[in-house]
Length: 501
Figure 1 (cartoon, rainbow, N blue to C red):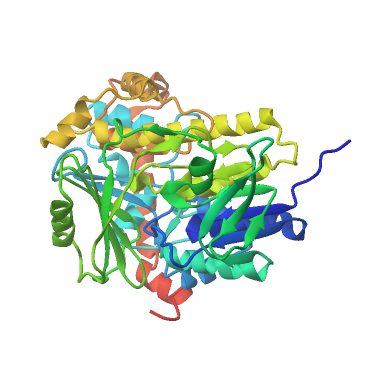
Figure 2 (cartoon, rainbow, N blue to C red):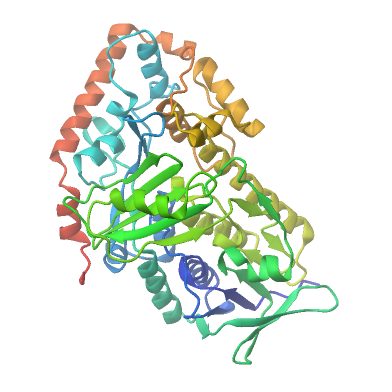
């Protein structure tokens, strides 16, 4: 006899995570699933996750949302990558750009041919000279063309946006599709006596919200996943030691460039995210190495324009819940864990974990084998991202005590093995399920100063003159294509400028 299906889904918490989850569940199940979202206007959201990575484009398409209409509503701009300033050493910078630098020759990726020429001492420029996304970013241009000059792939894009406006935009669409919102604080979580599953939520008004399945988007506190179900927390601060951020928006200044900037400071780093109506800024730092006042001073001294609000300090602890799914509750967003915003992964993890949950969507039997597999995949995804972030801190040549400690720390075995393997012939161990593919790892490894001893022997199948001609032709094609593109500012003004500023 088939098991009884889930009929009632309850989401605790709004913000970006809650309303994204509601939108994805509503789009997937339609009227077959009753969705209730509980949030309180009295409880604020962190609301500083304002940068994304390319998979969000797929989410918009799945939700049936027009890209330009969405950007108008969320004061959005385009993003082609992240510039890391001073991360290896002061005065140097590199891009982690979306997309693949260059184009492969046969089965060998382009970066291997660049390595061959670079290690031989040939004048072939930097790897980023052959990255279309980097060239578009620094030129302040914009294109959505799938192919460009020389039949090369067009630039891969993501967005910057106002997180509060995104939540409001998602909410409007969800409520129009039948999602019910309940206003109020949760005063009690009611568990079934026989098995400890969540049965209902009691609001401070006395209203009881019952459900078959619950999604916890209640932020760092994890009202359901931790407060009621005691999932436990795996602390990663010994690898990712920053534990606070001070954030403040400021007035926009000049041209809006299509990339995020991450600038290393004495005990952390500063983000700069350009939006249509303002610039988002924050200083992520280690409280054991720097005071709140000092971190705030550094942030305010490095703004592009006048502050638009008082700086606010946000505390956090890097790590993850030991289980993302416990009984009949799945944690999303900050409730599931937190890895600092260095590579704009927070919003992506909401999308990724929710996609996985919809794929594993249970019936009322809640098969423990499937729940265990779901948790295994979530753990693996978090660990892959963790290793990528730790790489940025560990591979540095800065002089400050904070950075020396990061350089000397013992990194996860999985990361140490990946670094050692890359040092041989520039090959990478990128596992299935790793969000960051070969292109990303290569750019950050080389950008942070980790160079292989040699390139792949397969590159020797292409002659020296033929290779130089190929690379020069590719660079010329990119330069021509970038020169012909409209500016980022002009593109936004034409296609997706917000109606109110």
